[in-house]
Every structure is written in C-alpha cells, then in structure tokens.
Length: 230
Image (cartoon, rainbow, N blue to C red; front, top):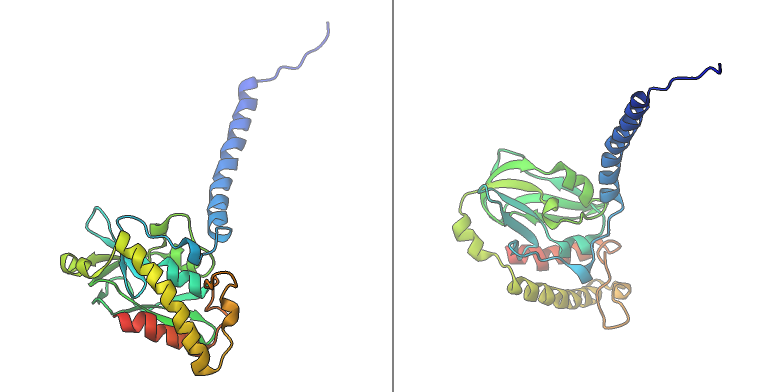
C-alpha cells in the first residue's frame, strides 16, 4: 500500500492569511510615504481655492470645522512661488494669538518670509505632518496642509475680513497680475535679471519663481504681498 502525506489545509490557509495581513500592514505606511514624497509640486496654474475655505490677503487661510475649531494654513499661491522650503513655527500649542501675529516663517538658506495669523484665538494643536510635507511637496487634500488648530476668539467678526468663493478667485488672478509688475519693478530697482521666471508665451510667472531669486526680491515680496496686506 502506497504511503501518503496528510496536509492540513486549514493550517496552510492560516499562513496565507497571515502573509496577506502582513502585506497590508506594511503597505499602508509605505503608501502614506509615497503620498508625501512623490505627490505633485505646488503650481501657480493650479492654485486651489476650495469652497468653504476663507482666505486672507496675506496668503493664509482659515477653515471652520464642525466642532467650532478653526484650522489655519498657508495658501497654494505662496507655496507655488517659494518651492520647497523649511517651515519654522513661531508659536506653540496653548498660546493665544491675535489676527496679524507672526505665526511661522518660511526659510530658504539666507532668505525668509514671515507668515501671519488670519484670525485671533488660542492654538490647540500643531500639524507636524504638514511641517514635513511643506518642505517637500503638497498633499492631495487641501485642508490636510493645515498648520494650527485654533479655538477662535472673534470668528464672527474676523471672518468678514476674509474672502472666499468667486471673490477669492478674482483676488488670486489680481495677485498673479500684480506679481508680474512687482518683479519687473524689482528688476530695475536692484539691477537684477528676473526675466527667466517669466515664461515666453503670455508672460506667465514660472512655478517656484522665488526659489532662485535674491534676498532683496524676497524682502520686496514680503513688503508688497504680505506686510502691506495686514
């Protein structure tokens, strides 16, 4: 009589299930890593202005959550101009800030831009993932790039100072047109060659235009597009 080998199919299935579970456990963090590192760069031609998000003229935004908390962040226009930079927070959780207070700083070598709070309130949380992401690439979801979670102090009053919807779209178009004028003026003022940041067709501003420009141009941008709007 020929001998035979008994195989417990339930035991082999158990191993297969364990391998599948292990694969998915390893895949999830790997997928999240790819989202942060291999996502698209910010682009001036695709500045996002989602419905329900309030924008400040200093190029920050505020989004009211259902729990009465407000998330604040930096808009795509500013991120598209600077390119990859380091983001340093100037405030911590638990601190109270007023609208216009210095919240964070964008830094690139010896160049920097100050970022101001669009609203008043108490800081309740910091988005550490956004700090890593901002220095590399953007994320698919706009509001995932928030910097601070805030408990607003004068939301009903201050939201009227912000813009949204069609007004925000018109504002960004005006900012892009104004940027061309500011760069042309800075070229004459500082005797610099900024023409490479203008595309030949239509004179559009190239993505990450500020990335390779001098500290003087960054100071000019700070003065014209951020400080003057406070």
